[in-house]
Image 1 (tube, one colour):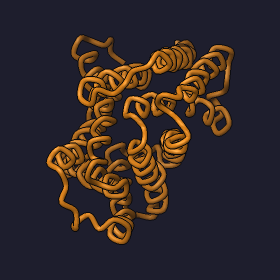
Image 2 (tube, rainbow, N blue to C red):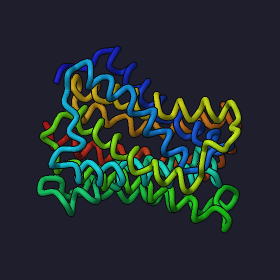
Image 3 (cartoon, rainbow, N blue to C red):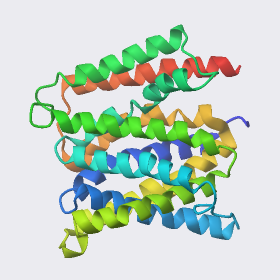
Image 4 (cartoon, helix red, strand yellow):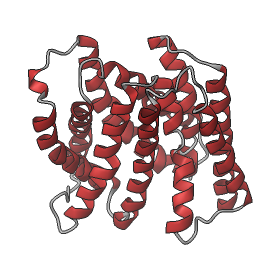
Length: 295
């Protein structure tokens, strides 16, 4: 891979800002929409830029090929379930907590990779990173100002949503030889198909009279935080590789916390700051171990 230039770092920061901005926008979307509707609109609007790219690049979409069951399964686990769980959880907790909880994805993926892959085993540095990172999350759950008996389950559901991303990533290895655009387009199609009957029977969003800010947020979540962010991620991966792109993990919880304060004036406690630092340090050690393995 080429040596990263200033533009590459700017794009990395932009990607982190886009993904981090999803959390406070989810909070705003919950003012008018239910979690199933938010999940549906995210995948629906998110599919638009991805499928347009596939059309203009003449990339075949294999959503209904012989591998349709993989696309459907990954669409459910990697999109439907986490989008629903995060939206449901954010209704009851601050969006900055969701950003920190979701940042555990690199730590969870390291744990799963140890058991389900042959060349991603634990070593001393990774183990230290995982222990520090998850200690930060445990410490966050002790913050009684922000997490109490009324929203404890909601916080756990957000963590479960982050785990769904990791499981979906492991399943994607089954079709790793296919083009990324094809895979993403196909799983977005299946996620939309799965959510259509669910949103129709459970929430009937056509009967809503949503607020303008909620409507803007949910469209933004689909077009920008889901669709355009994926295209930007793919560009960074192609030009700079996975190790460089994975640095976005440090920035998302930091930006998510800052943005939630700017736009929603959410409380930032001492325990939130300590947890944020611990998670970032944990991710750093895990990524450091991965980097050393590549040189």
